[in-house]
Picture (tube, rainbow, N blue to C red):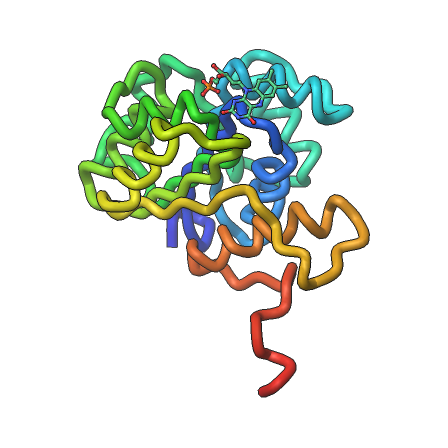
Length: 207
Ligand SMILES: Cc1cc2nc3c(=O)[nH]c(=O)nc-3n(C[C@H](O)[C@H](O)[C@H](O)COP(=O)(O)O)c2cc1C
């Protein structure tokens, strides 16, 4: 238990295409009685405005209010932190949750995490997850990937991070974009150990 909620997870949304993955992940985690400690990069705010109809405010406090209302979060269930809020729990091993997801993960943030830059709270929180050997999941999206991107993913995988590329499968024959988003979110939830009903498990039909 994490306070009044079953678990606590750090989520960062960065400026890669596919903010829908991050938003849906937050919604599912909140529905699963998880407290979400959220950070939204500046570039991610541009992507939200480009890819969705949402009117996400710029300030963390206003983002917290807006997203809490949007997803029907319980009081205190969604906490949003700013890019230089160094006193946030995620900035230290003593306060950070056991799991962090960067979804979607821009190649810029991927690179910063791989080299330990820690120049903003998202990068610092990921650095804390790595140094403390906690769970770190990154959901990168780019096409094609350069050697730099691939090397950074390999480096992070070798450090124990999990890379879940934003590449939905088609064997469920998705009819709607939301189903493709859920394909990836289901993978993330499974990694986090959160029960999910978004996607049937492979082979379940044969059991
Ligand atoms: C609409 C839009 C889409 C973008 N798509 C991607 C993308 O798919 N992958 C990526 O790595 N960067 C993408 N970028 C570029 C990043 O946002 C940019 O490199 C930024 O510096 C990342 O900063 P952040 O990691 O702090 O969020 C996109 C930017 C915009 C505005």
